[in-house]
Length: 379
Ligand SMILES: *Cc1c(COP(=O)(O)O)cnc(C)c1O
Figure 1: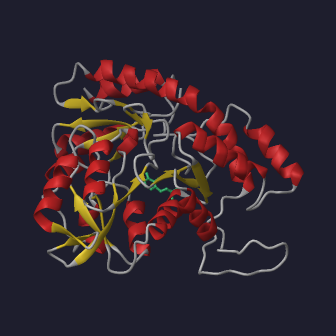
Figure 2: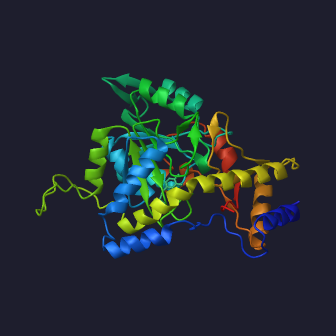
Figure 3: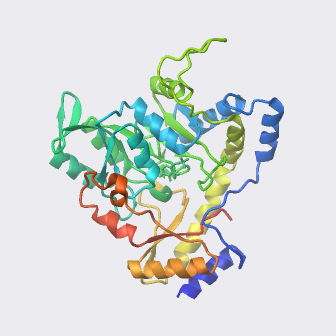
């Protein structure tokens, strides 16, 4: 069986050499725009490509504004700060996520609270969110209070795992009802839609990452999208050292952050975004091949896009029957030059987040022991 999987993947990528999990593709105007950027001498934190990328991204996802940042983690941090997440607050999120989600919450001196995920989306479960809120929370003076800890639940950060959208409209409805600010961690889901709407546009803000392994990349980069003009202005201000606009004076009115995306990276991103449709088409084709192939397996399920969604299929993933089988498959594929990786260890099991409140995390635990990512580079 393992041999069959190895042969299949080598056949897809037409090589017996090393096959990585996700490598970037630069087949468009990357070099052209980079040269333009260098010739202009505007290589740093201001420049035409930054403005252009922000416009292009906002237009693609259907948001009014986009603010580019140096990476996805800083995008999350800035979004949480603008949502007024501060010391002692709690933020509802997933235990099954990349550590950056929880790090950003911690930078605000707030604490993550972990809600279980759904088995089909791998993302926050609206049902479990509702059960948690009903059991533990009350709305007092327009704020959601966790009765168990007496802390304010200020924000909710669901994540669209591997590009598969979670039940984001039901989550958005719950957040409204409970006076919680919704910030989507859409770092993995550029090109993914829930019922025609792009992920990252359902709440107050949505955060993206353009790290080297993401669907489009500039080596590093991030962005926050929003429909709220005041929020967009605050985000820009906070991420650009909080400088008060003036022709020559250095005046800053709050403690700001140097989270600006360099124009060089923005030049790359403008080119990458032009190629996104091609990447998405290729990834869909690749996912189709995997779907067909894994249909014959009884003890492996390929994770398909959830109902009502269009996934970008950023990272393809399979669920193994049990942990033993997962470990064996990881071992043999990596030994044979095929890069595969287990899904993340649960955040609730990391030393920094061990004492954070959570619900049963039943599905999170199940998936955490069984899911493997398999090669997903654009063909
Ligand atoms: C990649 C990623 C981030 C962080 O992005 P960086 O650009 O690496 O800082 C945040 N959340 C999730 C879920 C991610 O996959």
